[in-house]
Image 1 (cartoon, rainbow, N blue to C red):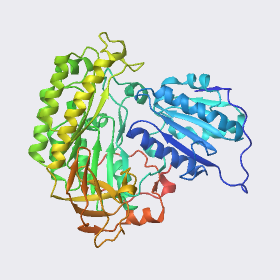
Image 2: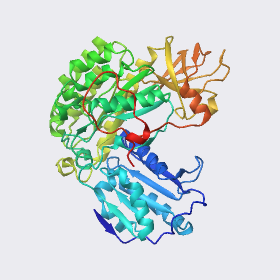
Image 3: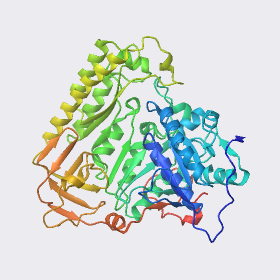
Image 4: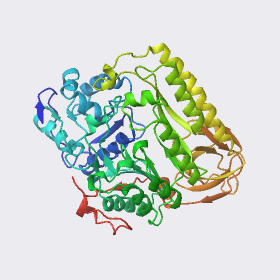
Length: 512
């Protein structure tokens, strides 16, 4: 840990008579970052801050936290651009504080304060729980606080969280990664994999369900390797089955699995546990065995396709999505054609496709034979066309069928113009529907309904007929009331499976 004198002195803390300070958390990157931001919000509210108004302009808060990503392209340019916009706001708002955390903070460390000396706090991925203390120390001392730890201080799930949704929540089962993919910087920023004990995970899930949450997504950099730390290679399949024992938990998803660790017991657990959704997001990255070897992906295309065959044999209705990188160093046209062949055979319902660009700090950045940008772009467009055709074919097969939809907020960008609402089917597909018929527009995010699909597009389904059934839920009640789910932290305990014991009171397990 180091402390750097850079930020201007802040005003003293507000007196009890003054209005509480406000905060904004701005998130960049993956689901891990989104979940970390929920923890940051929970910590700030535990420290007495309140969220800025939802329609407040960026920077219109007493504390602005930027939770950064180091993986996405131009992540550093985006960070410093945003910090540049905040600098003049800070001049006009005495006492305003700016904090930078996340993967880019872990990577760049003191560089952030060198380039943006108006920042008050820089913290890393291993000490999320330190933010309130660092902010107060910066206010008291009038100095910027830089604290980057090399290993996890406390497991993030032992911290309080303010959830973004009343109906669906992330639940972290592990942090870090033991893989060494040459294109990825995550292991060096998040550290080696550390697994939560099953009882802690299930206790957190139970707390969420008790608060009305209907859906959880189990989150890890590699969920299939869950259990390696405490010596149970089948722990993830057991965890899925244990989630099936929790009354009121209607949907269980997980992300992301790694093909090298995917085992038959997980497929069986998915197929045999009623509340586990028949949805699988499994990164392919490349269909070329030569490129997979260069990426240090410990599987080959035949193994990948074999897993998909096993999944579809057990769950014919499974929707399968993936990640693919185009233009990895040394990728030839023959390699790219191998990727197209695997995509055709896989019949993906969707894919996140990326044009490779070097990421500083990764082994791939130093590899020879970097593919010219114009070649990468041309291949990317061909791949996107094939993926779109595949997803459209899968969606068209559902026209005329009845699907269950968990209504969501903010999923449909055109909902207001089209007089529709949106939600997710059990297989993860996005469904736009008209809240008409007997429901007469009484549907709320968090409610569950059934609709008949009458149109299909590559990225969504449409149901413009009347809603067939509508079930009002406690999650919908909470959304309508404007309340957000807040959970205390769940500490580390002994391993175990089965139905969790009742959650302890917040005072017993919350960590400040």
